[in-house]
Image 1 (cartoon, rainbow, N blue to C red):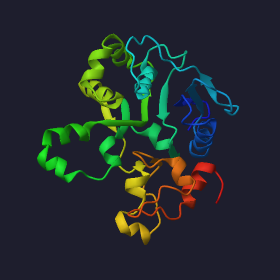
Image 2 (image 1 turned 90 degrees about the horizontal axis):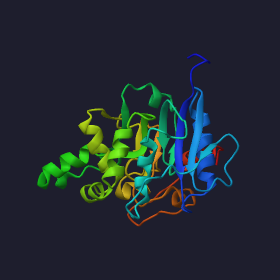
Image 3 (image 1 turned 45 degrees about the horizontal axis):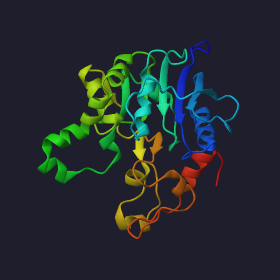
Length: 265
């Protein structure tokens, strides 16, 4: 790998009060430990207080919204607009509530125009859904999860513009930003997914199922590189020793704390 290689961009978004600056700081530290190639770390935020030096900050890129809606997850579509504060090149978007546990290099090496998590890969298989609702099951298996995706900045301004120009229709036809994005990427025939075990759900793929969790501690599946906290079990609960249920013991997670805090427990 050439030291003169153009830096890639790793980006995230932080708004409101759900996630403090420590989430961004630790995410960047995790990227530094697991990415060898040159990179710029970018955070779009409404409050840059507490963010460490070396994190490039930009305002939330939201603009041209005529519809008043409360689901702020749709804001992720803003990163597809053509003029994104002069940023250019390949970008890897990471949500704040995830933990990097292995090298990120493969996320930039894998061919594909737009790569995303297959949402169904993060959850246990819905057998009854596939039997009784086959068409819906087929649709759900295609939906992407935007916790981790890679794209070329500015290449999908058409998707952004379609939402801006048809907001009420888009919100009526699609439950969330992920379903809208998936539909449009499939229409363009450029939708690809990360290998199944690269991005895994802590709750469904790291914690042993059911009462087996009382016999074994959580661990990452082979080839896992990012642990995602999909659903109701949040990272803040887990790292603080919470999240236990009678049917699900969390157990020892020193490996997760080490990957998140950057130090051995």
